[in-house]
Amino acid sequence: MHEENRVQSANMEAMLHDAGFRIVENMKNSKDLRLIEKALGVLANDGLYACYVFCLSLDSKKDKETNNENRANVIQVLFENPLKKIALILNDEFKNTINYLEQCSKNLNKLMIVKEMLEKIYIYARYHAQPELKTRNE
Image 1 (spheres, rainbow, N blue to C red):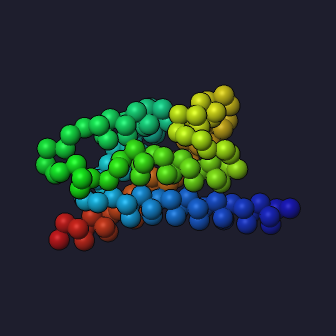
Image 2: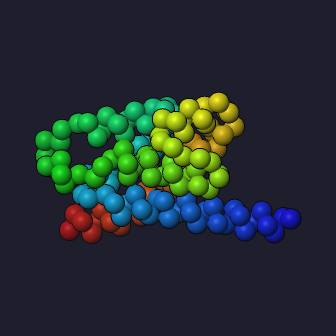
């Protein structure tokens, strides 16, 4: 039984790692990559809902330095896609982001697990982004 738990844990880590890699892969410029740090800070300090609102606000902002078409769809790349991956890992139904957040908020343990998993995804993304930022800035 313990071996099965280790295998499931390893698979979960691999899926979280993949989700972090996908964030970086879908970011279009170095400014977008820096958003990973900001999203991680908001998530860690203020929680899941605050992170969602932060990502929404980034999507609605007009970027003065670059054309909006050159920016990644921040809410989808930074929040919705990782949340879908978490729902898949936890065998949860994912209709849409708001519905899933409401579903999680009904169970404090689940809310904390989802938050921790999203933090892990952002941490993996941050490590993938560091060399990517160096190569894109050169």
